[in-house]
Image 1 (cartoon, helix red, strand yellow):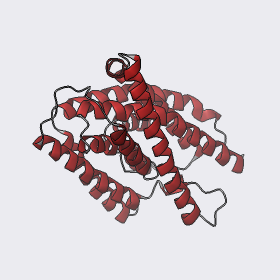
Image 2 (tube, one colour):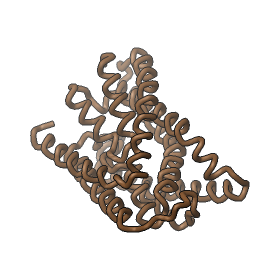
Image 3 (cartoon, rainbow, N blue to C red):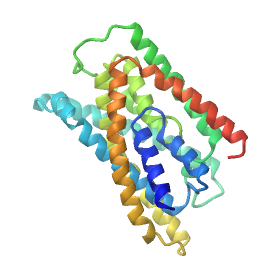
Image 4 (spheres, rainbow, N blue to C red):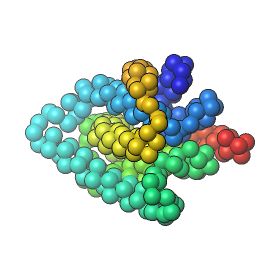
Length: 288
């Protein structure tokens, strides 16, 4: 893994992790074009660090907005915390059940199988991109036809938070099904204002990312245990550099996302996902 590889993947991850276009799909395609193995231990370590960088970008970008929206009073914070916990629990229940089911069915004859072994399947990625593209397109067009309350801090019900959390759980096992695209679109369609849906979606991401990092770390340790000949020491420095670059790229992506969301251009991301789905399908048929 060269320095150029790290820079390319960090920029791709940083930009697309925080846009509703599925970072995983873009990173996997980039890795395949560069002749890399997405399942290799050093790539797993790099992915963990890239997620860390983008999580820090989310905190840096949204902290001021979260403080104004959710930390103005003890009552407001309590409502936010309850909604966040409820949505996260539902994410774990839905996502965990689907993941466990796929691993038990698809890999029932493999004792050390992980669902991540399906993550480089461009045919599955194409389907997921198409589905989330349709969802984003519907939410964007519906938003343009409706008049949204001017108060971006309007209340979000526990029912709306629960629905967002459950949809986030659906996204976790499938590469290409953008987490931010699905959760923000679900919030908009359920009556949550655009800015509140964005704030809550990325607050959920900050809670979810450490769990994903731990899972990737456990998988990395298991893979290293099964193949002790793999040395990961040489991958640590490039991974740290990747985290820094992903942080910077993530800040750029978040500014872009917020401007387009507030300007009523959300449906453009849906169109992009549909085009990306077609591209992924063509690459799959081309043998990638």
